[in-house]
Image (cartoon, rainbow over all chains, first blue to last red; front, side, top):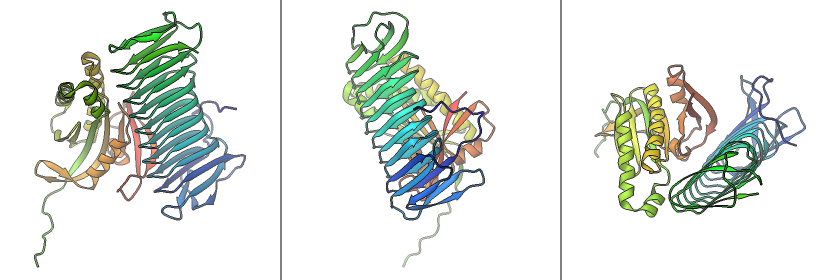
Length: 234
Length: 177
């Protein structure tokens, strides 16, 4: 079951903030009303209602349980971060750890060198990494950048913007918004719904391999210096 | 034993901005040195055009720049103008000016034409977390800009732990309405 996009007019959801230097961070969203730390930290409720989790050790593992739909912010230097369950808005920044999330309403995920993986993002999914791979199973919208890591977006409803330097790009769109993909040397593969006629705009000298009849059902902007480009029906 | 006197250099207060061209090394490998030079020249051309009075290029860092602004609102306004101009330049020249920007407001000590200090280091760490076309700023910058740039939007990314920086830094993604 997916979460709906966040509604700014609804009552504030629970909000959790975690910052730690290193050590694995695991947050589990489940049917409960409070936030508890199973391992490695203590909680403090700030005046604005945000629950802050503070690690008790510099580099120990941290495990936290929170209500379903909680907004989560995690900042860490080198820890891997795993979010299990259904969350609200999620923002994770790590210098070298991997990031993996379950179902979220929207996401901003940044890792300098780790992998980023998202099971399901109802709204906008923004992800950025240098050398790690980015894998998004389902998203409402996607905005992804990588240097050398492969980017795979299996199914996206709306707008997609992907930029990599040498990483391969694979996008599966449902056709609800324009698709943009830019690489320097990475190959680009875009799958569109069968029968949809794309308006393809290509910057660069590489030919686009496509079996699709051209039209104006969906705009696809692609740009590459040396990567192969294919646009195929799914 | 010689006693080192404490520096009498007067610290300057302002906004420290780092820019970085994403994928410059790969671009150079793919397109060659001549095109790499053209890309750097395109970046320099844009920066010189949009830099306001009082701001300066402190130094070039390979494919990046360290910029100094006496005023944080000017710095942010310029960062937006840079991105707009980089996009236009990219479209016109075909050169991928994929630039990211990191910004912090604080103090720095002049060392010749250079600037050194903790706040310079913080700004350098911030740009590492930005994606191409993004402007990331610290809470100090956000606070100093305050309401002086009403067309700017700030999305909090949270407290970020950065290598070598003892305390987490609250970061914001800045965009133009």
